[in-house]
Image (cartoon, rainbow, N blue to C red; front, side, top):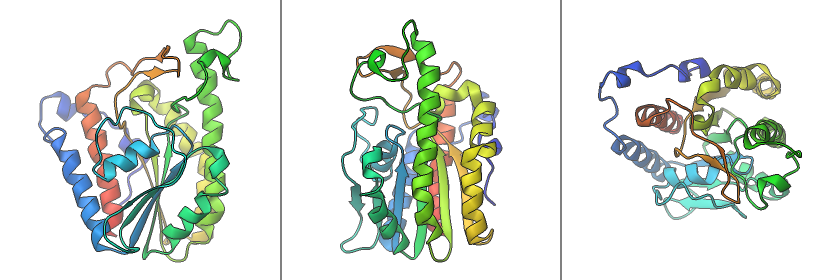
Length: 277
């Protein structure tokens, strides 16, 4: 049964009590290995899309087993493909997030996804905490004279949440043309930044415009053919900094290694389960 975003936000008190559930970081590696085995064995293209700076490339590298320096942000300029066997079978493909690529690169990625026996797409969002690139934050359009870093972050993340909606609207027509079952995961990253705002995050994705787009897709395919889950995690625990290395926001208080591991494993298990279906 698909879990709800509310269930994905449950506090992990068992871990806090010292119960060893996930055997540390090795568990995540075991799940990503299982996902790669399924991609090798099947006729599946796993597509990862979303706005720039949400963590798509980091997630793709994690799934592909390329885990060196995941905390380093590199802006993608083209689709990143990880093939697991020769030929067209077993492909993980991650789209570049800049909007200039949405109409040129994303349609080809969606076509590749639709050509497989299983149609799986992961839409990566981060409640607006998109990694910044380019100019200092004071030169960003969201900055107003007199803003401190906290003021700027509130305005910046609000703008970027609108970008996330625009990205999903761009994907929507391609999802409507999928034949057969469509499996969609909304992966909400940067959990270490918004950990204290869970209720706001839940409302944003389940009651607002994002939800309305999902409902249109569901209405088109029917409830039996459209399978959607929310999952939340952090791919790395890292303070939010501007391109000129100004500290804009610290990781949320209380978001420790145990919580990080629980939600990492939960998110990876969700992808693994999709590849099983």
